[in-house]
Image (tube, rainbow, N blue to C red; front, side, top):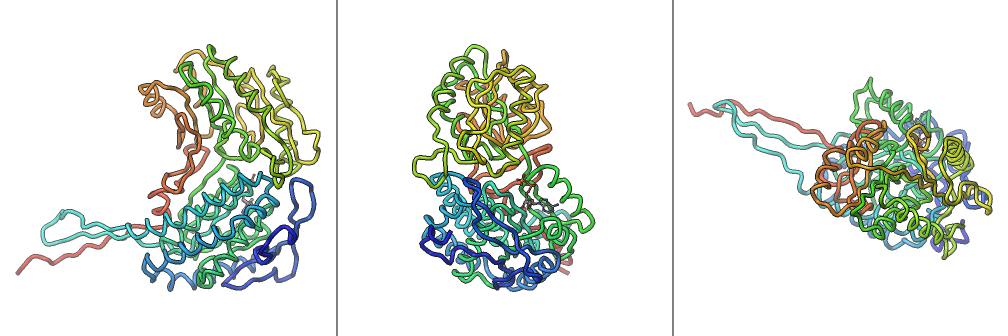
Length: 488
Ligand code: ADP
């Protein structure tokens, strides 16, 4: 790790609590490995309940001072944080690739996207105005204002640490909340590098804390503490349900960004070259380990063969390897469990009649690498139709009518992203209304941005990240009634 970074202090093997770098009280640690070769990258503290309580108390103590600052003052810190990320882009990208596996170009793009949440929310917080509500009773005036919730906790997954953490922390801090981040055990160094930059730009002690270690123990403290007023979680649906239930007794605000099962619908009037290029970027980015990856390709029967040919051509152009190598366009999966999961879905689909066009097994590179895979003959009874793949497998089926496509697309417990390729604008409108998903990408799959509300419905979660909506997730509306205003 040290050899690869120019600025070695971005590699931080300690937690940041109350502005101080610290270890677990009992000095226990957890290992972090490189998914491309299984080599040990280093250790991070294996913190538990005591350290989590300390982080909560620190964030709570810092809240009074932080929320009293003006939005401009808080925004200045966020602008500086963004600048620090830009100034260290190459080191941060290498760090992210080393612990997560994605190709360097994807790592850079993720970091820049993550950084863009800081200026957006720094400025957006200046525009959160209250209202003077039209009078409903003579002699009164009603007013509203938006106030920060308090301590906000973020529990984040391993697949996009450099964008997920800013996406939660930028609106939290801009709103006036203080934050505690519990990153995933597989990718803690990205979070800790962000913490190092936060310290460098002078973000006050306790305002941004990062704690690594025992997820269950830390999660139990965060969810049960009455001092924590907000939990923002991104991860699997079962863990999201469990954490939301744990937040019940203290009635805290909860945002959940959970699993997806995105349909990717290609109509017979679509620009097939554009649709295939969009499919490649969406499906194989991060080796298919994104919650908005196309999970089910639904293609009109008249263009099925033409679309599959184009997808196959795209897949043959992928270069699988270590993300640090310049020519790599697809890296490894995160761990052996991920490989086994993807392989089991592919086996199940083949046993139930799916046809393998290419790939379909662990890659000859070994370790956590899996072949980019294309299957046709997808059917609703297959696990791959129902479950999130989280791997580089494109599974395709055909449909005959728009109604059938919508019914197939909605036949899932999830409702995060969906995609439609068509040139018919009336159909676009019908699809947007008919698809039960929080987001739809029409002839474009790059959904996430600082400006737009990202999130799902049904089993994909609650709340929105990004956009105006993302800031209000960290604020509550206070109402004041002024009476006795009639002149005597
Ligand atoms: P993924 O499959 O992306 O790892 P998880 O839902 O397992 O999804 O993990 C997402 C985040 O939730 C990680 O930071 C993980 O450590 C954390 N996590 C997992 N289980 C718990 C739990 N019981 N309590 C709190 N956090 C948890």
